[in-house]
Image: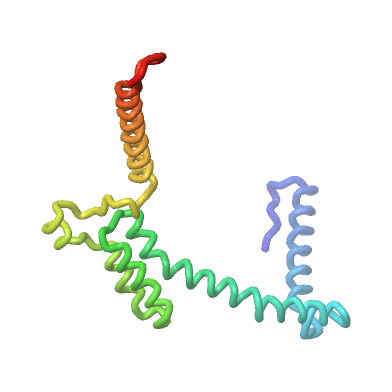
Length: 171
Protein backbone atom coordinates (compact mmCIF):
# COMPACT_ATOMS: atom_id res chain seq x y z
CA UNK A 1 0.00 0.00 0.00
CA UNK A 2 1.38 3.38 -0.97
CA UNK A 3 1.70 6.00 1.73
CA UNK A 4 -0.54 9.00 1.28
CA UNK A 5 1.90 11.82 0.47
CA UNK A 6 -0.72 14.52 0.92
CA UNK A 7 -0.79 13.90 4.70
CA UNK A 8 1.79 15.57 6.97
CA UNK A 9 4.69 13.28 8.02
CA UNK A 10 3.41 12.87 11.61
CA UNK A 11 0.00 11.64 10.46
CA UNK A 12 1.63 9.29 7.91
CA UNK A 13 3.72 7.82 10.70
CA UNK A 14 0.65 7.44 13.00
CA UNK A 15 -1.29 5.75 10.21
CA UNK A 16 1.55 3.30 9.55
CA UNK A 17 1.88 2.61 13.27
CA UNK A 18 -1.87 1.96 13.52
CA UNK A 19 -1.78 -0.51 10.62
CA UNK A 20 1.18 -2.35 12.16
CA UNK A 21 -0.56 -2.48 15.56
CA UNK A 22 -3.74 -3.94 14.08
CA UNK A 23 -1.80 -6.59 12.19
CA UNK A 24 0.20 -7.46 15.33
CA UNK A 25 -2.97 -7.83 17.45
CA UNK A 26 -4.58 -9.98 14.72
CA UNK A 27 -1.49 -12.21 14.63
CA UNK A 28 -1.55 -12.52 18.43
CA UNK A 29 -5.23 -13.54 18.40
CA UNK A 30 -4.54 -16.24 15.83
CA UNK A 31 -1.85 -17.91 17.94
CA UNK A 32 -2.97 -21.18 19.54
CA UNK A 33 -3.88 -21.04 23.23
CA UNK A 34 -3.64 -23.92 25.69
CA UNK A 35 -6.96 -25.79 26.04
CA UNK A 36 -8.73 -25.77 29.41
CA UNK A 37 -11.81 -27.74 30.36
CA UNK A 38 -13.05 -25.11 32.83
CA UNK A 39 -12.28 -21.63 33.95
CA UNK A 40 -12.66 -22.82 37.57
CA UNK A 41 -10.11 -24.86 39.51
CA UNK A 42 -10.22 -26.75 42.82
CA UNK A 43 -12.89 -25.63 45.32
CA UNK A 44 -14.36 -23.08 42.90
CA UNK A 45 -15.07 -25.90 40.44
CA UNK A 46 -16.85 -27.91 43.14
CA UNK A 47 -18.91 -24.89 44.21
CA UNK A 48 -19.87 -24.11 40.58
CA UNK A 49 -20.91 -27.75 40.11
CA UNK A 50 -23.07 -27.63 43.26
CA UNK A 51 -24.81 -24.44 42.15
CA UNK A 52 -25.39 -25.83 38.67
CA UNK A 53 -26.80 -29.05 40.15
CA UNK A 54 -29.32 -27.14 42.27
CA UNK A 55 -30.29 -25.01 39.31
CA UNK A 56 -30.87 -28.03 37.08
CA UNK A 57 -32.62 -30.21 39.66
CA UNK A 58 -34.77 -27.65 41.52
CA UNK A 59 -35.02 -24.27 39.85
CA UNK A 60 -35.47 -25.37 36.22
CA UNK A 61 -38.35 -27.82 36.94
CA UNK A 62 -40.07 -25.28 39.19
CA UNK A 63 -39.88 -22.59 36.53
CA UNK A 64 -40.95 -25.10 33.85
CA UNK A 65 -43.99 -26.27 35.81
CA UNK A 66 -44.98 -22.68 36.61
CA UNK A 67 -44.77 -21.62 32.97
CA UNK A 68 -46.68 -24.75 31.91
CA UNK A 69 -49.41 -23.98 34.47
CA UNK A 70 -49.68 -20.30 33.52
CA UNK A 71 -49.86 -21.19 29.84
CA UNK A 72 -52.60 -23.74 30.46
CA UNK A 73 -54.85 -21.38 32.41
CA UNK A 74 -54.50 -18.66 29.79
CA UNK A 75 -57.66 -19.70 27.83
CA UNK A 76 -59.65 -19.56 31.07
CA UNK A 77 -58.35 -16.05 31.81
CA UNK A 78 -59.19 -14.91 28.27
CA UNK A 79 -62.70 -16.37 28.49
CA UNK A 80 -63.25 -14.69 31.85
CA UNK A 81 -62.04 -11.33 30.51
CA UNK A 82 -64.28 -11.58 27.44
CA UNK A 83 -67.23 -12.64 29.66
CA UNK A 84 -67.64 -15.84 27.69
CA UNK A 85 -70.85 -17.62 28.79
CA UNK A 86 -69.07 -20.99 28.86
CA UNK A 87 -66.14 -19.92 31.06
CA UNK A 88 -66.70 -22.75 33.51
CA UNK A 89 -66.55 -25.33 30.73
CA UNK A 90 -63.38 -23.74 29.33
CA UNK A 91 -61.87 -23.83 32.82
CA UNK A 92 -62.70 -27.53 33.10
CA UNK A 93 -61.14 -28.19 29.71
CA UNK A 94 -57.99 -26.34 30.80
CA UNK A 95 -57.72 -28.55 33.90
CA UNK A 96 -58.31 -31.67 31.82
CA UNK A 97 -55.61 -30.47 29.47
CA UNK A 98 -53.18 -30.43 32.39
CA UNK A 99 -54.07 -34.05 33.14
CA UNK A 100 -53.69 -35.12 29.50
CA UNK A 101 -50.36 -33.39 29.00
CA UNK A 102 -51.64 -30.40 27.06
CA UNK A 103 -53.42 -32.26 24.26
CA UNK A 104 -56.73 -30.49 24.92
CA UNK A 105 -55.21 -27.05 25.37
CA UNK A 106 -55.57 -25.94 21.70
CA UNK A 107 -59.29 -26.73 21.89
CA UNK A 108 -59.65 -24.62 25.04
CA UNK A 109 -57.71 -21.80 23.35
CA UNK A 110 -59.98 -21.85 20.30
CA UNK A 111 -63.10 -22.15 22.44
CA UNK A 112 -62.10 -19.09 24.50
CA UNK A 113 -61.88 -16.99 21.34
CA UNK A 114 -65.08 -18.21 19.65
CA UNK A 115 -68.34 -16.30 19.69
CA UNK A 116 -71.06 -18.41 21.33
CA UNK A 117 -73.64 -18.31 18.52
CA UNK A 118 -76.13 -20.72 20.09
CA UNK A 119 -75.99 -18.85 23.39
CA UNK A 120 -76.75 -15.60 21.57
CA UNK A 121 -79.69 -17.23 19.79
CA UNK A 122 -81.06 -18.54 23.10
CA UNK A 123 -80.39 -15.58 25.41
CA UNK A 124 -80.02 -12.65 23.03
CA UNK A 125 -76.44 -11.88 24.02
CA UNK A 126 -73.06 -13.50 23.53
CA UNK A 127 -71.63 -12.40 26.90
CA UNK A 128 -72.36 -13.62 30.39
CA UNK A 129 -73.45 -10.88 32.78
CA UNK A 130 -73.71 -13.14 35.84
CA UNK A 131 -72.07 -12.50 39.20
CA UNK A 132 -69.23 -14.86 38.34
CA UNK A 133 -67.70 -12.21 36.09
CA UNK A 134 -66.01 -9.18 37.52
CA UNK A 135 -66.48 -6.82 40.37
CA UNK A 136 -68.70 -4.35 38.52
CA UNK A 137 -71.74 -6.61 38.75
CA UNK A 138 -71.01 -7.42 42.40
CA UNK A 139 -70.66 -3.74 43.30
CA UNK A 140 -73.91 -2.86 41.48
CA UNK A 141 -75.74 -5.71 43.22
CA UNK A 142 -74.37 -4.67 46.62
CA UNK A 143 -75.46 -1.06 46.03
CA UNK A 144 -78.93 -2.24 44.98
CA UNK A 145 -79.16 -4.53 47.99
CA UNK A 146 -78.12 -1.72 50.32
CA UNK A 147 -80.73 0.62 48.83
CA UNK A 148 -83.42 -2.04 49.17
CA UNK A 149 -82.47 -2.71 52.81
CA UNK A 150 -82.55 1.01 53.66
CA UNK A 151 -86.02 1.34 52.12
CA UNK A 152 -87.19 -1.67 54.09
CA UNK A 153 -85.80 -0.24 57.36
CA UNK A 154 -87.48 3.11 56.67
CA UNK A 155 -90.78 1.31 55.97
CA UNK A 156 -90.49 -0.70 59.20
CA UNK A 157 -89.69 2.46 61.20
CA UNK A 158 -92.72 4.23 59.73
CA UNK A 159 -94.92 1.24 60.55
CA UNK A 160 -93.51 1.09 64.06
CA UNK A 161 -94.25 4.78 64.64
CA UNK A 162 -97.86 4.31 63.52
CA UNK A 163 -98.40 1.35 65.79
CA UNK A 164 -96.76 2.74 68.94
CA UNK A 165 -99.24 4.01 71.57
CA UNK A 166 -99.18 7.67 72.52
CA UNK A 167 -96.94 8.39 75.44
CA UNK A 168 -98.67 8.41 78.78
CA UNK A 169 -101.83 6.80 77.37
CA UNK A 170 -103.03 3.22 77.22
CA UNK A 171 -103.48 1.29 74.08
